[in-house]
Length: 57
Image (cartoon, rainbow, N blue to C red; front, side, top):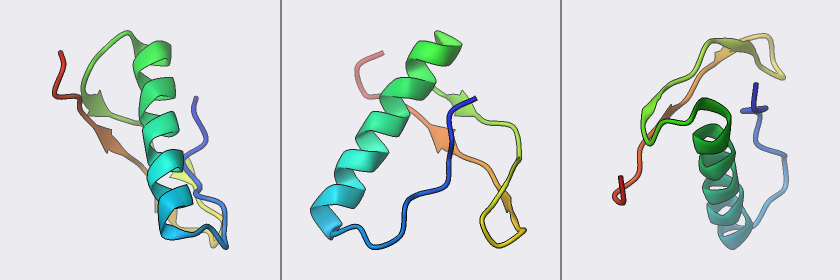
């Protein structure tokens, strides 16, 4: 499963890049252009999950 914990200390541009790369990784892993991930443990103990979609398919 793709790690959904965004690294600390990223600039705005780095956050956008991280989100794009994570979305692409989710598409590769699932073979789907949209979906919802399973819950994962977050850095602070809170559950982390993600929703992704693509305009191109």
